[in-house]
Amino acid sequence: MRVLIIEDDHFLGESLSEYLRENGIDVDWIKDDREVKDTLSINEYDVILLDLMLKYSKGEDILLWMRENSIITPVLVVTAKSRIEDKERCYNYGADDYITKPFDPKELILKIKALSNRVHIPYVQTVGEVEIDLKNKTVKKEGKEVKISKTAWNLLYYLLKRRGEIVSNESILNYVWGGKAVGDEIIRSYIKELRKILPPDTIETFKGRGYRLK
Image (cartoon, rainbow, N blue to C red; front, side, top):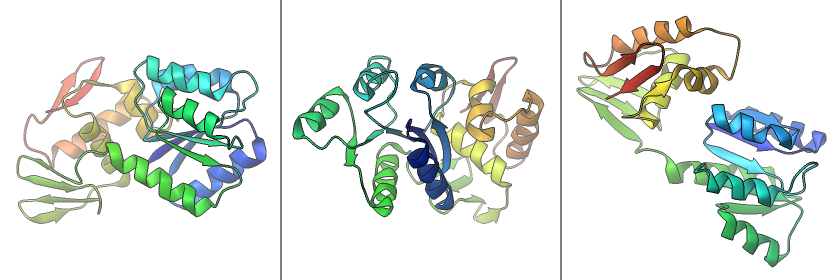
């Protein structure tokens, strides 16, 4: 799972990032809310944690902008605002859940997982004779488990999540490698690993653009 935190409080942002990573969640953290639009234009997340009281803009305005621009990622508002009017406004703008500060970190994890499960593809996917169990992170071919690397698994999950779409090289690099300085050739090497497991021609290549899982 990959989560984006939009929070300008450095202590809270750092604490949240560390806690989520300790619980097996990949995290990106935006400290300067002016970077939100650029970040969301090239990255995809499973859940977004959004503070309302930011330095340069209101969290409510960011939430409204996301929904008006067809960004459907589940949003969990994390804020000190506790009035029912504030909650109502956020839900009307498209928030999926709301938690007020201070909060129990375990409750936050529960809410994140619940939101992630709402939009996830079915836990068990089939591609030809290959069965992919997303919950247990296993791949079986003709009933026998096949071992794949963690990176190949993350790539497979992302292609499944976007099944039927042409997924750009840039979005793959950002989702699987988190924006690290790696080139398109590394994608090709892991696509090759997946092609050894999946039925022939399951993964289509669009030269210079990206890949599509049929």
